Image 1: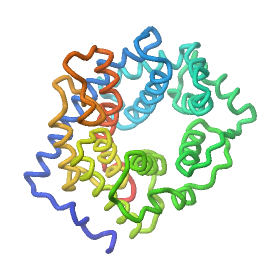
Image 2: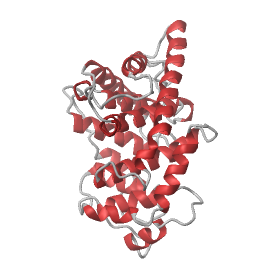
Image 3: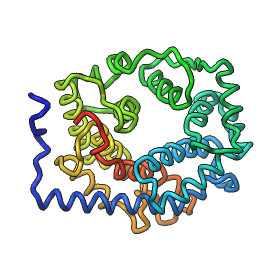
Amino acid sequence: MDDASPHPTAVMSADGAAAAFLGMERLSSGARRWMSANVGYLRPSAADLPVTPRAKACMEIGLLNRLWSRVRPDDPELAAIRDAVAEIWRDPDFPEQFADNPAYTRGFALIYSALAPAGLTGSTHPATLARLAPDGHVDIAKKSPSGRLELRYYAELAGLDHDVEPYDRLYADSILANLTDVLPMDIETAYRITHTVFHITDFGVRDMGVPPEELMRIRDVAEQLTHHFIAIEYWDLIAEFILTQSCLGLDPRHTASGQAAIDALLNVQKPDGAIPARFAAQRPPDTATSVELFRKAYHTTLVTALASMIPPSTACGG
């Protein structure tokens, strides 16, 4: 099929497209509002979360800040995110939290250094970067293609040299490139697929760098998996595959799977904007504390905010 041909599931009615545009903005508005209102749980003065989950969540809020600043720099809801990220990155004790779990120490240190806000002063990340790569070269053993891909992505954001192979070779070794059957699909493999697309495209800025027929195959995989995770009510991966579609140059507001995904998340989005959990069976009970509600909703609401903000017009490959 010629790449210029309409995608087979991309034909939507005018009414459906208009509803999808409105739905995406409602989804985005709620998710951004919730992230802004609840980022205080990650500030250095907060002590409600265990150390390792909090450190991981802080890395994720750093990524959200980077991408949100890129696509909607004047958004009023971004101010609280920017302030919290600056406070976290200025906290001299924060890098020490990485040491609590040696399995994460060097990886967290790299991501922490890579996601430091531009122009930030008074942060400890330069010292962390100097300890991690004293000669400007990062060497973190990652055997899997997905691990090496993540290393290359964050090393380049941090301005470090590395010995990781080029993106085209990393893609050739990836699960996505070698996928023969889309279904059945396990959760871990699905996350590797989405993150392969996120890192190779830098969340929609770079082209996948594959031939047109391979791009069409990847798009079909993304759409099939969008439908699959809607069917099993795995909300976190629904959001990740909306974002994946945008990174692949599709407009999820114009694909049948994308519109169904937007509707699925809108149907479970709470009045405060949260997506309550990663998947339906994990939905917190009415008796859950505010901290429990935050921990359940955090990642999926963050991904939903990203998925509903990244405009397909910025994604390459379409």
